[in-house]
Amino acid sequence: MIKLYGMTGSGNCWKPATLMTQLGQPFEWIEINILKGESRTQKFLALNANGRVPLLEVDGERLAESNAMLCYLAEGSALFPADRWKRAKILEWMFFEQYSHEPYVATVRFWVHMMHKQGEWQDKIAEAMKKGYAALGVMEQQLKKTAFLAGDVYSIADIALYAYTHVAHQGRYDLSTYPAINAWMTRVEAQPRFEKMDS
Amino acid sequence: MIKLYGMTGSGNCWKPATLMTQLGQPFEWIEINILKGESRTQKFLALNANGRVPLLEVDGERLAESNAMLCYLAEGSALFPADRWKRAKILEWMFFEQYSHEPYVATVRFWVHMMHKQGEWQDKIAEAMKKGYAALGVMEQQLKKTAFLAGDVYSIADIALYAYTHVAHQGRYDLSTYPAINAWMTRVEAQPRFEKMDS
Image (cartoon, rainbow over all chains, first blue to last red; front, top):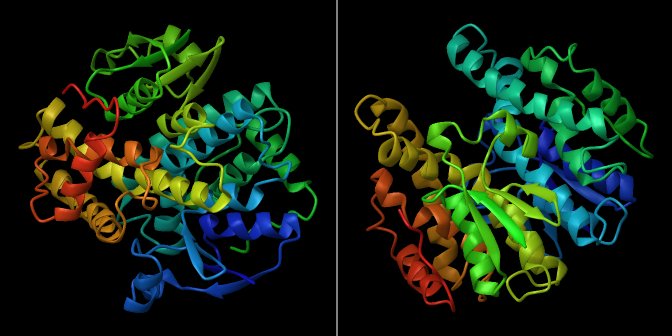
């Protein structure tokens, strides 16, 4: 049985869980509350030296990094086609997500929605939001041209980017001027066995 | 002919250039000076909406994100084996690089070595370096166990992590207490047709 260590409400943890549900892959969810330091205990650090969730366990071997999990789990499915260029474009969006989107969109949501720092960290949040809106702008441009991020077909790139985009409002991002993103989120939610995040 | 838009001295741009040299893949390098705003011109933004280098052009199609390029270019080579789990572990390190390493190790080097902000941004630099050292610690732990990051064989994960690790000292990181990283850098540099970065 595949095990997934994760925290409810974390977009990064939601990604592999949702993909496995969509693929019909059974797994056991093990709750790790990072707000209580559960990802930094000696026991957990022995599983993942980087002290982060999600963490995937397959046949006793462990894999960190949510987007690496998506690639692993989607192998052989239509969500990660074997075509070399298509795969490269999907990976492009997934690296974009971790470098240009998550550190601003997810982080602001974490500060505001989970840590309630919207007053205290006002300047830091405003600074991060500029970069978050820039990332959302890049997505909007692409989604004006294609139905999904890496082209006309739903892929793991859409799971990766949907994760924190659909809860961006919890970080007080205003998506009302991003019609292509909103239409895309509706298309993503209409995929078979798609489950929104508990939050 | 494959084209690579990049800036000399950028580790992210060095990655695909080095891989292509190692693979014997000819390419044309087009210099883009980001310090002069050349990645934010209308002309360049039409090529990459995210306004970043490197940017790879293959048969008129474009691919952003250095690590997506590594995956694309190494397809079919020993540097990115087809085995599903090995590939997942390589991707794990590449996502780690973009999320936990590059934003602290590369960024501090950029601030100190290229923007000369070591005095003015002292606090911000100290804050970022804590996270940079944490990432280097995760690498050190792995490299005590295996010769290369994703196991016993050199892969694109090593190219991705070597890029900014070997110039970390330019950001005033002290790697003297990371013997496994130093031994690994020597092993990476000994790979066929390996070229260190101009800096």
